[in-house]
Figure (cartoon, rainbow, N blue to C red):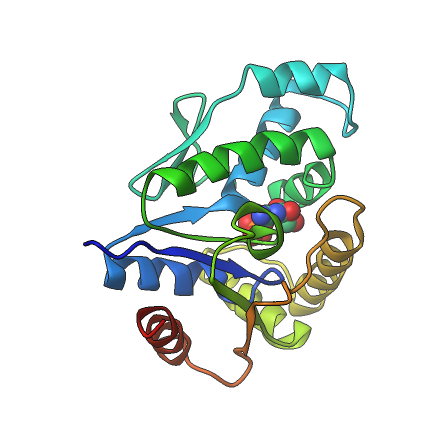
Length: 218
Ligand code: DC
């Protein structure tokens, strides 16, 4: 493929970013990079090591010694496949907390930019269009109402056998939206040149087709 893709998808949690990004990646034959998983991996390591949830020298030392990488859409933390371990509510909270730390973001943004320099990619997250792939022309902001996003997550968790109630999931979604969009460093926001997609009443296929049509007609 001679065409080079550097596609950014940002938006709040539960908007369908990763589902959509994976499908776009497979249709275009490019790599999908789940940047949220990278923050989750750091959150997991902080919990495992019993580190305080604060920005300090100990955290910097841990970051200096930490390796996060992808291989066939699986995420590796220091060589260990942690893809399944990072999908709990506890890790969601740790990821949201540690993503507010400047030193964590510096480390992960550097890794993400290096991944984007090497090959055609689609990346999803919160700061891809505003920071990581700022100069890309292929930016999308995918959102849906908090109720719709909570319902999708609730059904997903129920499928996995977790017993969280809808109200609890909705509360977590609202809290996380607040955290992600009110932190000082790279808060979640739509890049000025990103195309807004409200998926509340759209099917996954409709969103995927819309993105592919946009990037291939540029
Ligand atoms: O997309 P996710 O739910 O897996 O993301 C986990 C947390 O990481 C979420 O609270 C927001 C944060 N995050 C971020 O700050 N920047 C990114 N590029 C991706 C995720």
